[in-house]
Amino acid sequence: MKDIQIENKTIGVNQPTYFIADVAANHDGDLDRAKELIYLCAEAGADAAKFQHFTADTIVSDQGFKTLGGQQSHQSKWKKSVFDVYQDASIDQDWTSILKETCNKAGITFLTSPYSYKIVDKVDDFLSAYKIGSGDITWTGIIKHIASKGKPVLLATGASTQSEVDIAMSVLLRQTNDIVLMQCNTNYTASLDNFKYINLNVLKEYGRKYPNTILGLSDHTPGHVTVLGAVALGARVIEKHFTNDTSRNGPDHKFSMDFSAWKDMVDRTRELENSLGLEIKKVEDNEKETVVLQRRSIRVKKDLIVGDIISENNLEFLRPCPKDALPPYELEKILNKGMAISIKSGDCIKWKNVK
Picture 1 (cartoon, one colour):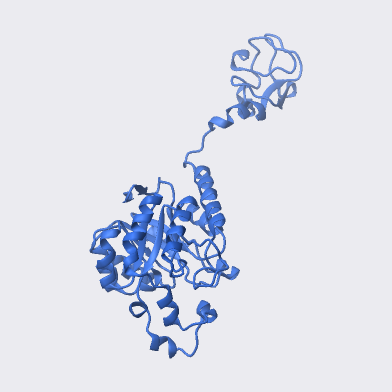
Picture 2: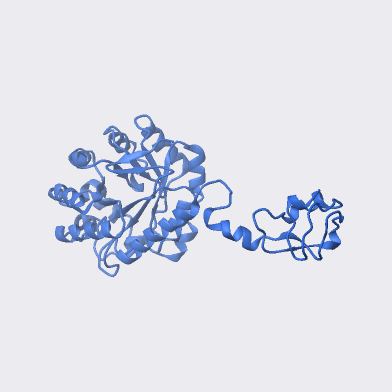
């Protein structure tokens, strides 16, 4: 599996986890606030700050939602119509260069999810990679258009079946191998029940079906336990929503993580990465002293002189075990052998003691 390069960061199975802070609509329509959040994302340990580029009429049908007979799921708490909420959350296209410049100054990558063909073309010059949101996984046209740009693509797979994931992946793989396939559950209620539905083990299936594809998690559950689980299962890209105040009004704040929670997530993940290590079982450098201190050695219960026959009645197994001492698993090799060198009661037996 080859690594993926996004600006100055390398993403791969042997690389540190790549963190994307999804600002989404948490800018609240305020450019200065958006810029402030970018700097906070960087300070919290994010590698990229992600936005969402759309206009309300390029992502939702006002009439379509009105005919559903009422707002559902997380949208049920919105005080405005779905169309109006998306209109308020949309980014002024003139912001793009400013957001990109601010990310550069903060030392992180600018990313976005563009939600129309025209917007893809408008933001392309500012992007080093694309994120396709779960809601567009069945829109093969936009997937193909984004893939044609020749840049890495991060594909979220919430609320989709394996066959739908396979269709989207087949479209991408015709044009690029620089793909991050991200498990996701698209319930935005921040309910603790959502842990039952995140299904991190799907990453195992993704790994089997697409062994040359980097895996990731786009997550909306509270806290970071799912992030740690995903990284342990092989995910190398993590996306979580970011805000500086989860109590603010807006469609995305309630299920986002604030600065402290985000930074803690990154710090705990770095600890986990150090803990995962290699698939090689060995005595580690920091254990070499305890090998002596905690292991038992074969010791004699009484003085033995040259020529005495070693019997189990004369032996016991006690700590410590110096480097040249015999461990208990060597017992059968020395029983009924004669002593070559005399030793005192309580001493450990060494090969040089045995004929």
